[in-house]
Structure formats: C-alpha cells, structure tokens
Amino acid sequence: MRVFGIEFRNPVLLASGVLGISGYLFKRIEKMGAGGIVTKSIGISPRKGYENPTIVELDYGILNAMGLPNPGVDHFLEEIKDLNLSIPLIVSIFGKDSEEFMKIAKKLENYCDALELNLSCPHAENYGMSLGQDKNIVYKITKDVKKTVEIPVIVKLTPNVDDIVKIAIAAERGGADGITAINTLKGMAVSIEMEKPILKNIYGGLSGRCIKPVALRCVYDICRNVKVPVIGVGGITSAEDALEFIMCGASLVEIGTAARDLNVFRRISEGIEKFLRKKNYTLEEITGKITKNI
Ligand code: SIN
Image 1 (cartoon, rainbow, N blue to C red):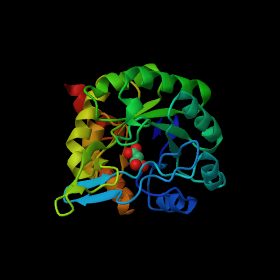
Image 2: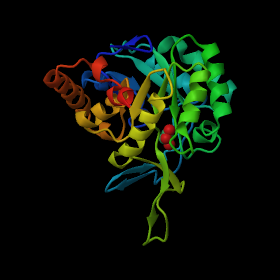
Image 3: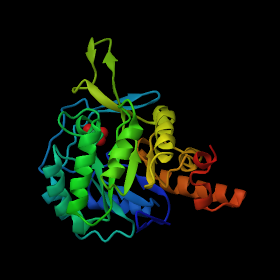
Image 4: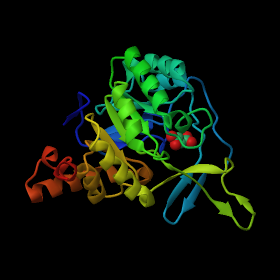
C-alpha cells in the first residue's frame, strides 16, 4: 500500500514516544512486523527531560511526562545513518519555532522517509501543544518545513483544543502531506498519601485504551474535512480498534501504549487481513467507509 507516496507493507506503525531511539530497537520492531516506525521526538540539541516520576500507570491507561528527552539531531543521525531498514522510518521532530524545525528537518531529510512534526506534546513549555493550539502557528511551521525539505511532512495534532478540525485544515493549507491524530490528552494524578501530584512535572499526557473514543472522534471529524491522508492513533490495542479508525478514514494507524508488547504489530495487521478476507473487502474499500456514508 502507498500513502504519502511511500510504500508500507501493512498499515500498523509504531507511534512516536513509546520506545527508545536505538538502531537495534528499530531493527527489532521491523522484525516484529510493524509497517513502519515513527521515532521518539528529536530536537536540535540534547535534552535530558524531566526528573522522575515521569510515568504513572493507571487502571485505564498511562500518564506520562518524559519532557521530550532525546540525544539531539546530530547524535541521532549517527544512530540511523547506516540502518538500512526495509520499512519506512518517519522521524518525529520538535522545535520552539519555525527556524528550529527547519534546521532539524534539513539535517534529517536524506536519512528518513518522512517527518512527523510534534505540534502536540501536552506538557512541554514552548514546544508541542503550546505551538499546535494556534492554527496560524501550525500553518506557518508546516509551510516553512515544507519549503525546506522534499520528503513528506506529516503534522501530529493535539486533542487539547476547542476544534481540532480547524488545526487540521491549517496544517493542510500549510502543505502538510498528512495528519496524525491524536497526541495524548493533558492530565494529572495525585498521591493522597504524599498529598501532592505524582508526576514531577505535575501535568502529563494520558494515553491507552481510555482515550480511544476521543481519538476516533477526532479522526472521524478530520477525515470529513481534509483531503490529505490521516494516521489514526490513540488507544489502539486490537485489530478491531484499528479497523474502527480505518473505517473512520484513517489510511494508517500508529500503536503507542500497546507497543510495550512488540507482538502487537503482527497481531493487529494479521487481524485486519483476516477481517478483510472474511468480508471480501480490500483495505481501500473499507477506508473511510463510515465517513463517506454519512
Ligand atoms: C514526552 O517526551 O514527554 C512525550 C512527547 C509527547 O507527548 O509528544
């Protein structure tokens, strides 16, 4: 299947932010059946991230505030430059403004298949969502990165806005080749014993099964209003979940929290195949089936 002009062996990709950024890990994910890899977000220089605790395990999902830890783009390039992956590598990048995004994008352009702009991290001051909640900023950053590189540029959106469709349209107008929806929902957790917030950063991003209905609603609304391909992400743990996103219009899906078990990629892509065989459909025939019918 081809999306953004890139060939994917199946529609089930690793989402950004869940696993590390070592070449060894990427090779392992390739072996475990993923259709593609989206890396953890990479910035212009090394960043330590927040102090612990950075993760809270909840009965219904995970709350995380890692603080965008990464080795910086130059070091990251060393990690990926001789990888020779047989599946597409999409590098997630973050910056504080257009200039920073453009610098990182240019450095990466020859070493990956596409870029995913993180305009959606819900808890990093001056980055992510603090840019991605403003449609004019989303438009400008997308446009500036697009004029800098020739590879596809995908914009990852935050659900923490009054109207995600407005932001998706701004990204599309800026020239985005695709939209990823959604990043995590801003939240917090409290220890009643310690009488304080659990996360060092107080706020974190909520992911996992509990956010699936929100993610699905966003994908459905976006797909009815933009023409570029959409990647659905948020709480997907089964083939049935993935098929819901595909029927709402997603061309690809990303697995985040559930990718802590690497068997998930094969399980979901084989489950999708099985459903298609049973119904005698192609993937194209069911993509957006619900969206188109309403
Ligand atoms: C993090 O590194 O804190 C998560 C990144 C994100 O939510 O986009």
